[in-house]
Length: 163
Image 1 (cartoon, rainbow, N blue to C red):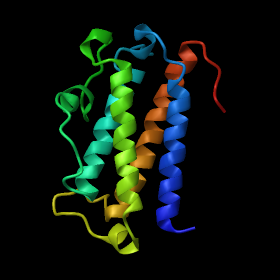
Image 2: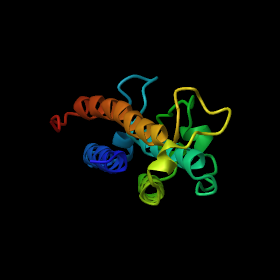
Image 3: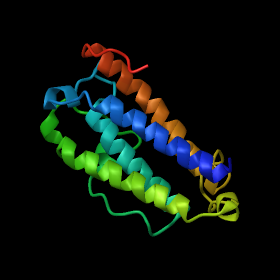
Image 4: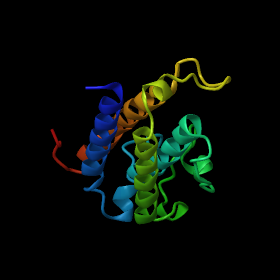
């Protein structure tokens, strides 16, 4: 299996896991449920995944990212989730953006070859991102980390583990 095939498989599998975890969040109160006031909630997760994939697109295919007004402030790194569901767009809207941004990221990956994946990133990119392929790897790892937070919230709401 090639690097490109592994990246595509893992991006798709990780998102499928996220979708399974998110399927149990139904009411506005569940979407913003926090195990602790400083913990992330499911609605923040959805917006954060959309914001993150959009950022990853800006690194691997500049110009393929889109304007997401208020997403950085509400869902970007360092943002603090609020327990008020009216502070956010609807779950349906956020899920749509999250799904569309992942499809865009997968489309960019589909268009790449080994040389594209090995291409160095622009100056100023964090040192832990060595090349374009490492951005896709980060997308997988990053979503998995946040899935752990979703799992804890689901369990606290009384749902059984998926695995």
